[in-house]
Image 1 (spheres, rainbow over the protein chains, first blue to last red):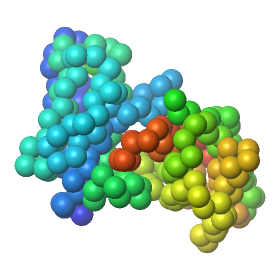
Image 2 (image 1 turned 90 degrees about the vertical axis):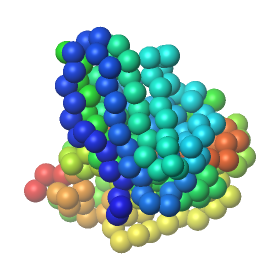
Image 3 (image 1 turned 60 degrees about the vertical axis):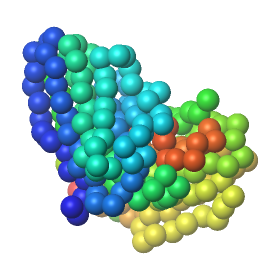
Image 4 (image 1 turned 120 degrees about the vertical axis):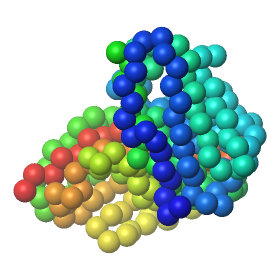
Length: 115
Length: 116
């Protein structure tokens, strides 16, 4: 597609439920990143994919968070047993390759609210 | 560890004023990259500029200019003759730590409001 697409744009869930957030990167972009933007914490790195592999998962805050990428394209971020502190905007970004580092293209994000 | 500090939480100016957004970074690496992103009210982060640590030339793009000074570890952003459409949150970011990929450390952001 023309840009990075994320769905849903908004998600309200009850505490304790699982949620899945989806990211469709720009076609052909091999590098994909997830970030979280929350009040008081700013923008935090979560995970990096190169193709279908995730060589850097260091930003995932707990084992309730996981992510996968299939076909070198779509990525899904899953949060299990959601907590109120998980409320944030989850942003996905992609770039052409791991060595590009020329500045990502970000999606519009998924605003997650845990009630 | 990498760190980016944007000391100005909020700035308010009147249209046509010049405004400078400060960014100070910390890294022990000699090779690193610095970025500025704009986040308008729509929420999508927009890439503005990337500089590498070996290029200290200042850059100008229309009303935007960037001043990179390694001696003070600063990468400041100036908007000349500001406009209402410049109202947004601006983030400075750093890529360092020897990674060969684009993992970024962001500052807390500066909220810029330009009044008509």
